[in-house]
Image (tube, rainbow, N blue to C red; front, side, top):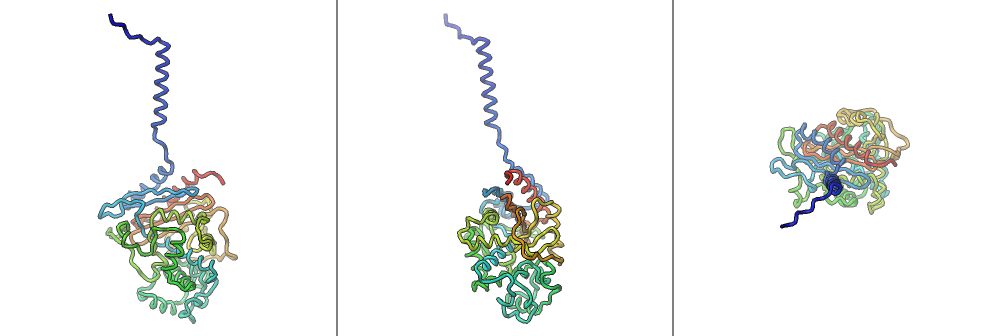
Length: 398
């Protein structure tokens, strides 16, 4: 007669059941998906914007305490369906002005110019014009007296632009009004390069972009990388890329990736890893405040606010009227170094692309938004602001 299997006692059964429950509970803890608060914050801020404004693609980069991440959404080309990746190149529009500002600060740090110098010192062709009394600083901060946002149609090349400038008449005394201007920052960058005796494109590419180790940032995208160059979507809903023009390189000509842009932000937060000490000083110098307009302080390229800052104040300082109209400003004398806690930001647009960059050095946090549609500035700022607030919560008090 075969022997019967031995049945466990009641106490043994309870032990086995308890062990099984404990194993299941432990397995549940291990298998539970981990929470990624940064990803959740980016998704919550960006996905509604993508849907509302029908943005084909976007790259969002964030940095916290020297470590960055990039989140990609949608497509770089609506025609091909090519997805946005870490290699996708975007136009950053007027965020290029912060690179030009860095170049100007770099040339000053080398002792080749002073921001207080007259513009005609580096372009004698303007002698006898209004520029006799306009400084490089006033050009670099849009306070020369009312230079227009865009070059006039009759100024299609540098010679024509110079001739037009000779006859231009300011609408206000230099240093009293701010009027945002591609012509103003364009001339600033052109003269800074002349002070060094080198072409602007060469200094920007070799000394500034190269000096910061930005290996995927260009004024002209190389042929080998054109496949990564995103197509923007214009107002007519057709693919578009930026059109070259006078002072385009200085004012809106940079093309780059989200990874390079967040490195640029990180170097503005802490540039000590830059090998060229002159370039280190230049990055810091762009944070100096020269003029005040409401809650915004105009630096060299960057625009500055106290941190923390209300979203409404940030939106007001980036309102379309601030870009398109002249406003009285208060000169800060002496110029104000970077304060203990401040937010720096800059918007940028071309016909088919929209960009926003913001960072808070004291908290070591920053965000970059690159989109291949010129979506409204308020939407960019609101999305970035929500992300910055989330990043701020992940950073310990300092």
